[in-house]
Length: 558
Image (cartoon, rainbow, N blue to C red):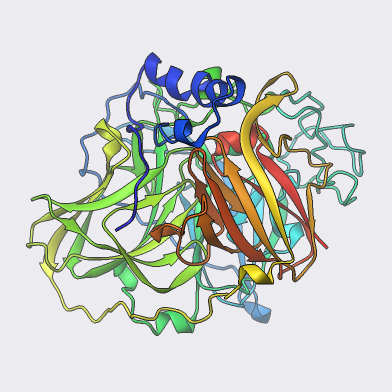
């Protein structure tokens, strides 16, 4: 059985909630009053952030059908490469029944369309930007060359956006029409990566992203990654799924077809006019980055969406289903549990993690998942009576945020699927003794140019600075230390969790990961090998507000 995080739920509202978990709590308490002991921090609630309250009537749970994101069709498959085209544009959708909500979308849908690809078959996606601001696309979990990884200053500019000086020196322009950026200072947003890489972003509407996909089959996701504005862009809808498959995985006979369900979980809040509420300092997302002070530690919504639907319900057979779960929330953590109408728990049999299949299945009664993490689980509905219901609940929520979605068992059916005792034999076997060095990084709140920020090693992100240089092929151990909750993501590589505060990893740490949830006061050791490509990449906190406020660093592979 998985362990769960201590503390109260993230659903309480009001000023007391904001004082406890907003800037006065997560930033002021930790960074500015010196409360940094593990014991004190361990009593923090299970979220870092403050919750918005929707201003429109909300539907009852388990009434809206679960949507399944459409699978995007390639425009070409010639030459051994699958080519796709995707337009980023504004759209309006009925997320809450009877309410129209403006969105920023990929191809007009939220989530964006799913891309399904085969291992080692390259994919090129041409993105066209018809939004009112620049964008960047990052394939989260992809082993991708640096020029397609979605570095935060590699912008796709919309038509009519003020021109950016080609090859401008760092600090001369910031790609936001020359406006000063109060969050990180005056950054060069021309796409130059500072002085390291003299490339400039093309002043066109499109950009090609090429993904080799020479990696294990896994559930990946793509999302906006523009510097200082990632959080509000994802909140407005810029996120979608990318599934990598191969023959070996398909030979396992895991649930497939309509019994394989992608589930993108995300919390949101709604304004009185039906729009998505978000406490941005600049709602146009054109000039000043950042959020209003109570939300500096993270933005939480009071509506739980799955595939863009509020608390949906899905009709299933009395059989096994493979649930491919992504936490696409900005800051909210979940601890998922499947409960029948009569209170009986169903096992959550984890078969995969961020970077694909586990070596062997791990059975959980409840399963924690932090922002940007993915869990691949099999749930067996065969013991549920026909007409019965199974609720997926969030043990870290309360009130409306405790409910996630439901399944209604509709019929008996044949089931040829299984969960093998051995799922994969290709997981890396790195040992601590193989590491050429051990590095340590602190993820903590702090002061940033006279204001509040979130820092790695005491420094805010600067695209002109190289923070870490590693050699291609080297194995390293990284020790990551947290003040409050920080889901830490490494671009380019997968890693294994070695320990948590000197103890064994938790059950949900199994497998190859690219995002690890640091709990308050915790030190987590991970091991990885930088064996893919040379170039400039990133590591950062995936609490998206923390990321926008400086908690990101440059990683150079040489």
